[in-house]
Image 1: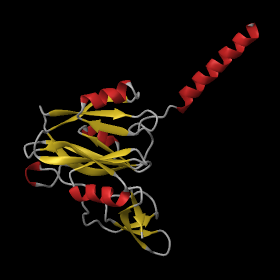
Image 2: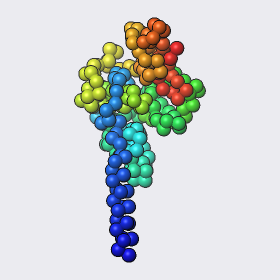
Image 3: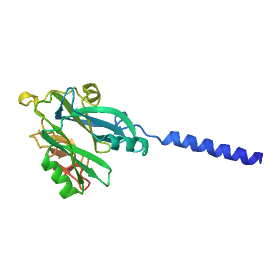
Length: 230
């Protein structure tokens, strides 16, 4: 009987140690290579609808929702970590669309209907409707960053958090500080020494590979992730 109790205690201790060792950090605190993508849209400085941010402690992925019931289900039943109110949103104006990748379990939020349609029609993402709205009167920038290690996007109004992921953010070059759309291709300079197949940003950027001087373009792969492709 005594031997059985000792064995049971040892099993319980080993189980506890294993659980502590496999718990990952969230994507924000992990040592990941982030790329700043600028200002996604503008949020109201006060008032509006609260947008909640949660993190999955198993995968490190983040989720954003205005639905308090969805927040509570993820927090209380699925053991997500509630990180507070990420920013506020409007109830009318330009829509922000929400899409979901069932393979990678990632969500994406975008004002760009073309980006939404490309992800849904070409890359197997599921359209989940309008998450919230952005009005012309909103003045608080919401920054977007890309985690190149897992392809996740992060949205934040915290300039210090955004700055910690890379260079200091700047205000958008648009009239009345209206939101710019980071997902639309710009006219970037050609980047030399890129790695074919690696994560990239923004869509449509050009790069020269390390071998043979081949030109690659920043395109979506079959999983809806931007990578350097021929």
